[in-house]
Image (cartoon, rainbow, N blue to C red; front, side, top):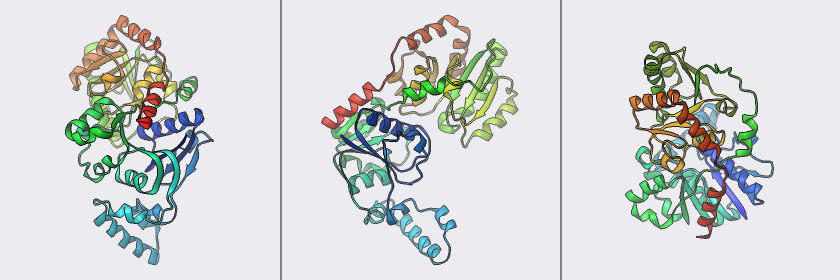
Amino acid sequence: MKFLIVVPDTNMGGVTSSAVNLANELSRRNHLVTFLDMQGDFLCKERLDEVVNLLSLTGRSRLWNLGEKDLKKAKGFKKIALAFLGLFKKITIKSGLWFRLIFKKQKQLGEFDVAFAFRQCSPCYSFVLNKVKAKKKIGFVHGELSHMGDISSWKKFMPKFDKIAYVANAVKEQFVKRFPEFSKNACTIYNTFDFERIYQLSAQINPIEFNKNKKNIVTVARVSQEKRIEWVPNVCKKLKEKLGNVFHWYILGDGPEAENVKEKIEELQVGDVLTMVGSVLNPYAILKEADFSVLPSKTEAYPMVVTESFALGIPLVVTDFPSIYEMMKNNVQGLIVESNIDALVEGVAEMINNSLLLEKCKQNITSQSYDNEKSISQLMQAIEG
């Protein structure tokens, strides 16, 4: 089959990783896959298999995301023209007129068997619906409705797709409950993973020398309010008071709240038990040697780090967002705790103190196999349905 995967950009994150994994998985199953980065940067190029065909927009279509950085680069008459075009975009973008006009001269792409608009947003949805020839068109939704804010700019496109694929049943249920008309084309397709890559990278040497006399905890996440990394210094302070200096917590990731978290670490004097590692190219070599991992997120759709942790045999302490119950069971692969600091403290303390529980969770995790058969089966059912 011929597949087209369209993303508005390839800024690395969970959605981009999932899109790359899907492209590679389909190509490894002998399908022909084309990957379109509407921004044209292809920041994920090294992650894509060589057989995946890369595609960019042409002509004025490349201005779909016209912004301040484009105006700064331009000079003379071009700067003036872009300024007027930017004003027009501001006036017309919410109605969808901007995308219809900016993509008007883009040559229609196709013919594909299936085209995916892989991120929920107007440019991605509009482009696939209007500028792609495909037998089936599937739009994806990667976030919880309850934490999305105003979705009016893109939800009007959703009924026009053959299918809308939500990355978890819990996410699908949120949308269908609020918008019953969306049930007609709703389906669930879980994220795909590059397990081969995970195992290869995890075999590399851990750049951090863990103290084996302590419980080593790892959190892999963007340092943002959605991930609640700002909670971690408070949790560490309470754990230190409760248990003493018997653990060390490492945060792998960067983001807008990084400086605030560093200041809090200093303020609460927990630098001896908490380290901000920052962004790392290979988190798996570090994660594989952790005693367990922690995900304190406020909202998640289908967090990739959960399955990645399990694939490496690492138990998890996680806050109770809806989709987590599709990914693990409490007291089986780890602990699901209430979404507050005190509950997180108790959950992490239990995992530190209870060696029998920790070992049981590890055994349960390693007794399972990890592959993409479920998500690919869901995808094929969506195509055939």
